[in-house]
Length: 479
Picture 1 (spheres, rainbow, N blue to C red):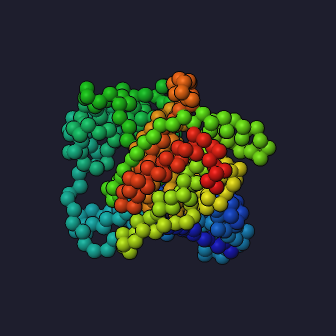
Picture 2 (picture 1 turned 30 degrees about the vertical axis):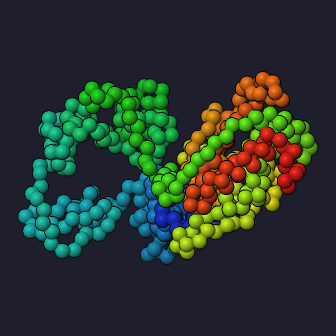
Picture 3 (picture 1 turned 180 degrees about the vertical axis):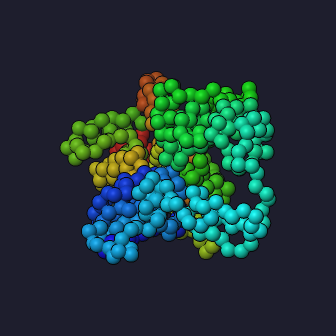
């Protein structure tokens, strides 16, 4: 007989409480195998694909794309024995499964007062309030008298929105209200009707739903409306006053990776006393070294970049100055010096800033470090970084030079004591061997936690990195 199994959203990291459904990889009726990816979920750490814990047929998706789900809540139901024969009395699936198969339209209930059910008895003293998809509540309830079943269109379009009651409104009234929404709005906000997947599509395509002409039932914006709006053929003429123009504002939900990043940066900025120091240097020898490495067979599978040499220089500077690779343990009133380096690389992704790290980077050779760096950046850009790859970092590099920026004052990644900023490499006039010449010049900055790293130690660390980049022969002398 059919065997229905619910799968609950697991904890995808250390103490995560919720996740957002980004994309369903299966649909009701699909046959899945064990460990087949079924859904892509974004947490406060990263976006991950969740494999199926069962083999069978998908019978129900409990949440739409774009919804945020608590850890431990069911997200999908499987029939793990689809070929089995059910007894007559249980041959039909539960109403909730029928609802999913019928485009989430619930079965007609038998209780009075439900949408689609028998009309409630007249002149009753008790009114039973029910929720769609659930049974009636017990107990006696009091409520205001019902308003008339129909609200004239004129009443909807002439009264302030705050005075419009959620009574049944005719289709004509809904259309009139949508057409005149700008004229009656007193809050300056436009409210649109659209399902979560449609809202997500609009965000992905950069479409402002407030200027899309709805064609769905009761003024609902459909997927087709959003797609037509991309071509400019379905834009409405709605606006609010003269201070706000079409497309003048966009609201981005603060959630997932962006929310976690923002909280971490605020916590770091206001808990650790930041100090930032700077240096400008000629790295022409490093750029020549990068060109030579690209021709070597040991690096044929590696995308060699100046960042690789900067990373190796920082690892060597940490070896010479181990206190910079520490954590402040306020509870124990101790400084924890770490004799391993989990090297973090700050990466900008469409979902926000993340800092994955290369575990035990100090033990890797230069080709191995290059391969690890390539894999880390490719995974981050694809949005596939796992939560484990972003935990337990010890020191970080942020490369703002790829954006053409010369320098910055980066915020320390929480739990670490320093972050190195690598700026753009530019052709600039420089005094070389007593003569003015055009050289490859860059800037470095180092932000550090002044509770652990004082000015002398911070200066020594950035000076060591600069010395290695200015004269790569020092790698041999200091290794």
